[in-house]
Length: 345
Image 1 (tube, rainbow, N blue to C red):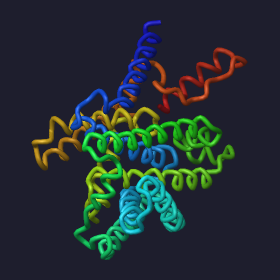
Image 2 (image 1 turned 180 degrees about the vertical axis):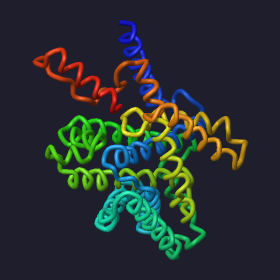
Image 3 (image 1 turned 30 degrees about the vertical axis):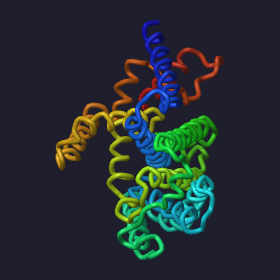
Image 4 (image 1 turned 135 degrees about the vertical axis):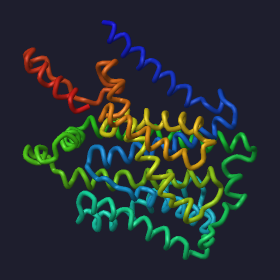
């Protein structure tokens, strides 16, 4: 009973937090809203990487490729082609999807560490190619035209709120899409792949189809995040738009400490990262060293990350995505299934 009350209380707190973040421009100062916009962008990246590495077994270290492609595509459509900036954001996601198709054909011929290296090489090639685009500022990049910036609000507060709601809406769509995917039959297959890929294939899970769906499905989200980040930073540049540290390495850190292969893990990991960053910001290079040390300690204590520790106290998922056994199962079967589920989380 006490555990049920704690779980319901945690779910209530989560619901209140969602409502509060939806109304953030009305509740917090502009500086906090800017910080929350960055949080939402990184949360989307964490959700997408977790879906790829945690479920589909696509351990990519080239996620920043599509963030950069989205940033450059947004600039091209909005600043160079004169297309409506809001439409340009969606088109940036479409371009990322188009780029993901040949990339997928190439890297899916590789496995394990070779696949990870392949995605990184593709990202580096795209970054080098972007530096050759003179209309986009070449190697030094360029700033967004004022006319585009003003299209999201003439007053600074209005622009900050508009960009925040874009980021919040994208994060909400990413979470809902992931939730319904994992609740579907495909999601059951992805969960089986997470636990035992060979076993999943043996019982009929179409592993190739699941991987293709996840790889191509995440690309538009990454491209749109790139456009939102560009609106925040107000400029594009190869090293920043295609930053492996900001858009891949730190994202992997968030997912790993939060709990890879779980729905709640990316959320918890991103929250913890932002809290640690606030306290470690003045330490310079030691910042990354301490973040890396913290992630190692967490994994040594609990391989399922912080969510694994929290779930012990809650007794169940904060956001239930697992399919429960039907009433027709006897008590022993239910106990066996629940025990197996706990061991996988």
